Image (cartoon, rainbow, N blue to C red; front, side):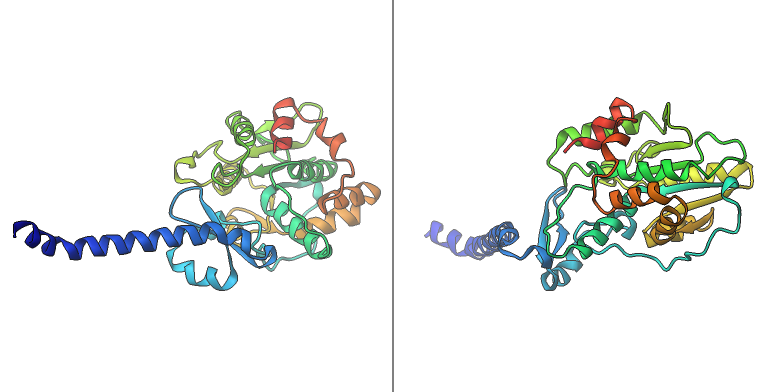
Length: 307
């Protein structure tokens, strides 16, 4: 009699617990298999509350799941399958001479913009590449090209006239532990002034603000801190090149902002064959990539080629 009464009292709790467990199990299994069942071109990336786990959902399911996804700054959540938001940008020339102008490049936003452009121009090809492997060498080529003209007559600065600032790979989104390790090392070494490559500085996320505990690997804080330091003591003619609308809004209080269309015009209209070679490399071509890789220090070569 006692056992029966206890069973009657606890049965509702057992039933509710079993139902919840069954629903959660089915939810996890269905999300685990959905990636292999859906078309590549109609996926969106959705990060679950468990750090580092990502599932690709069709656009309709992505809309339904949006309220349950963690809320993060738009600037920090640029995904490969989501079209890069290109701000409305002036393509007109700068109001100053190039010799007195310094340039800073938001590398990963420019890389993503050109990766998307290359995919749109080659829709018949299934192009999938890692924006942290080999692509940073292409932005280094852009910086070398700009350094031929920019920043020859400028106020004193701790860095070279053309700076390229990179994000770090998210350990939860990449399978290459070697890539994460190499990028973390070059980040700790601080902004790199390159011997034999005058006019170019390479900087990385988490050099000044380590936000790895929050799972944030965007370089927006480094860009803003470097801009604030540059503009603090001397009036400068500083330009930031970015394809991120959020980064543009934050940086406009410090300097003039331009986007990838302005950068493309500078490359193609002023540098002839060298500019055309750099543009072809930005579109995914191999032109000059290996030669420029050999001009980098060993630590940067290992980071930029790890995959």
